[in-house]
Image 1 (spheres, rainbow, N blue to C red):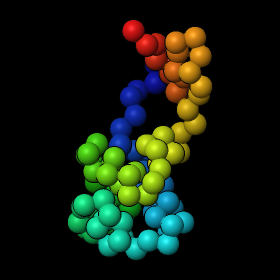
Image 2: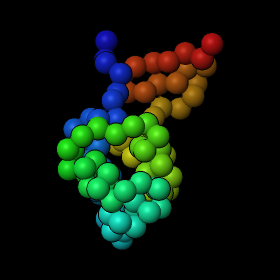
Image 3: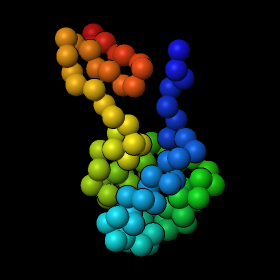
Image 4: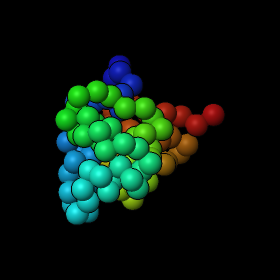
Length: 93
């Protein structure tokens, strides 16, 4: 069984940096838009430490991407009450 995804995954910082640069934002501009410190963005981008779910979602909002896009995941379609995520399947109750 695949372990649950952690926002502290090693490539998260790289993805955040790519998304920020693609939008022409500085770390300061992204931090201000997300309501966090520039050092927080810097630490995340360098994979110096993990992040909280709250900070991750704030960065997603500031970057105007969904969490799955920020994580580089390809989410399957909802079919038959199932939501496929990679090789893990979650059933709605």
